[in-house]
Structure formats: C-alpha cells, structure tokens
Length: 287
Image (cartoon, rainbow, N blue to C red; front, side, top):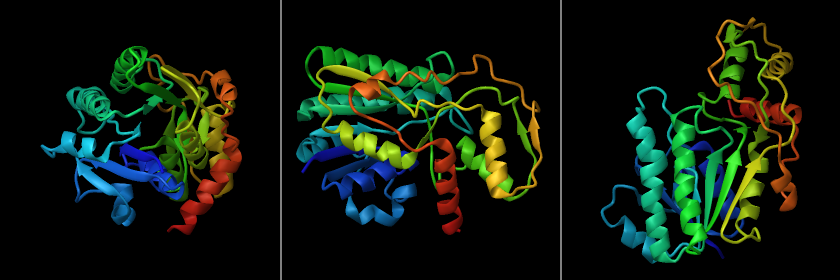
C-alpha cells in the first residue's frame, strides 16, 4: 500500500486524486491550509489524515508519516485578491519547503503538477517553472525521482466557476451573453477522469532521476468551436460575442506534442465532445 503525501487536496484536481488514490488502496495524508475550509474535500475529510501547513510540527509529522510518494497539486493564480507575492509563496516557497521535508523523510518520488504554459505568459507559469528547476536539481543529484506532469486545460463536472469551460456553461445555462475573444486560439481539453488514471500510473512509472511529460489528448480545437458546441448541446439562447474581448499578449497555443505520453503508455482517450457531454450531464444531475 503506497503512502502518498498530497497537497492541494481541497481543490478540484487534488480532491479527485485523493479519492482515486484511496480507491487504489493507498494511504493518503493531505497537507491543507485550514481544517475548517476544506473545499472539495469536505464530504470525505474523515477518510484522510490531514496536516495543516501552519502547524509548527509539520516537518515532524511528515517524517512520521514517511511518504513514499509526494503528489503536489497545490497552486495559486494571480487573480482576485491574490498578489504576486502570494503566487510566489504558494507556487515556489511552499513546495520548496515541502521538498526539503520529503528529502529528509526519504520520499522516493515527487509527482509535480505543472502547466504547458511558457514561463513568460504570467506569474503563475513563471513560478511553477522556477520550482521545477529545484526539482530537477535534486533529481540529478540522485536524491529523489522528480516527475513533472505538464497539464493542458482540464475540465469535468462541478469544476470551479473560474475555470473557463465552467464559466461558459454557467452563462449558457442562464442564457446570458458571452463576451469572448475572437476564439481562434487552440486549446487541448483533458477530461478529469483521464487525468486521475494518469496520476495513478505515475505512481509506478518506470523512470529515474528527472522526467517531464506534457499531458493532453493531442487534439486542440479552436475556442470558438468548443463554445459553439457547448451552446448547441445546452440549447442555450446566449449571444456569443466573439471579438468583444481583446486577445492577451503572448496568447498561448496548445503544442500537441505528446510523444512522451506514448513512450510511457499514457493516454487521455476521452475526446472533448464526449467529455463535455458527460461533464454537462453530471453537472445537471448534481443540481
């Protein structure tokens, strides 16, 4: 039975992974910001060992748990009230300290959740990329196996409202107008259930030292095609206002290079149309 230390378990991806790892027979210890605000983990909190990030004895508790694998999904974005300092602390300082604790505890493998975005796109991407440099440094010293999973845009039922597809669905359900860019940028959308399977396989993936794997389906439709499809399957009367919002500077494009996934026998088989239908169905059934 694998002992897994997990950050970000109160978030969307992390909570999915916590439940999936539990189904796989793993022992899960979740490092959280607060015991009172557990977000997506609230309904299942009794199933996991919970440690608080601010606990002065966090280091000792991690040593006692002796994790074999660290799965790091916690992150922060520069949005709302979040400052660059908060992004730095969450995406670089916090995981660096966790890495030190894991090295001391003899953790064999670190599975890192990263982005396919280049570091110059925003502060989130920059801080995530900078932390990977530290992971690579320790991996090349032979102190830990560091696997960097670079995720495309993932989605699924009940995803946070700030996720792009969730926002689109919410607006379409209310028949509200959608102010959008021209929508000519391409995105690869990954279904959450496929990601769960990727992370389970990552626990035993045969590699040593450092490895990075971009994760996606290999299909990247235009945003306007995806939004138009969502309007069709929801039966919405919303006006799609393409061009109402200017494109961002350095607008990213999906790379569609998943040779590493094929090398390790990984796949995200759910196409974006089928995935959106399933997500919408589950979303409606939960209301």
